[in-house]
Length: 323
Image (cartoon, rainbow, N blue to C red):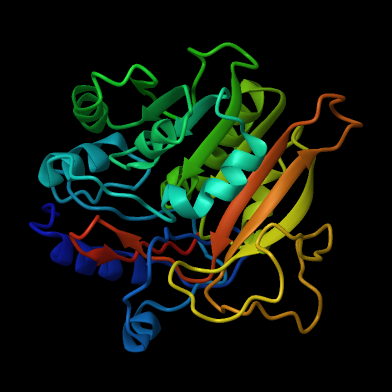
């Protein structure tokens, strides 16, 4: 399948591909990126379907020769996309401004940050502008890594390496204070062998965190479909939930976004609980239970019911997967 020639056609391709995925409910995982204010019509949302779970491990992407449809978990898909887009800035999910209260609260500016699946996003650059001093950016695409190296050659706080998040063995244990992922796990969940890929990535991130480190995971998957993949053997997380409304939400919130929301250990909200914004993003803090590790580490999981992504004025795009 050839790469789309524009953001608009790419968006249409994404919708067709992801809507065609298996839709049978399962406790596997659901995903999709978000970003500034959604511009998707209700009719379009109904056409894509709202995801509560997914059946099957595979997912489609675009590009590839010989009629083969590439997976979102494959480097070839992303290389082809970044060649087509020319490295234009593209932030999946929330911008740094929306995530800043959480990042600043739990990762001081002197923290050594690992940005997983950096792509061509502006988040790392924005964090440097906000005082962060060391951010290691990795991505499976060698194309985008070279683009970002050239773009930020004069910003010593930003480093770039081509790497698969499922194997970050080049880094020693306990190398980072904070790891951030905006959409990489979701891409893996749309690929072949999704559960294994998720386990590999989560265990690698756990290995790389220093004592007291945190992992901020931004995802579409709600706790019922993401937590099983995060609770790997050796990663026994205690979960604290927060709710962040989507960008542009104009309603009134009953609580601060930094106030925890009640949730059972299995990831179930109280009966009758309804977020003020039905398209809220949910932030889960997963803290290691001390019975497994006396050093406290924590993981933040950001997710939502509907998310769109903005290409900095180049159009908006939905990215849904049923896993």
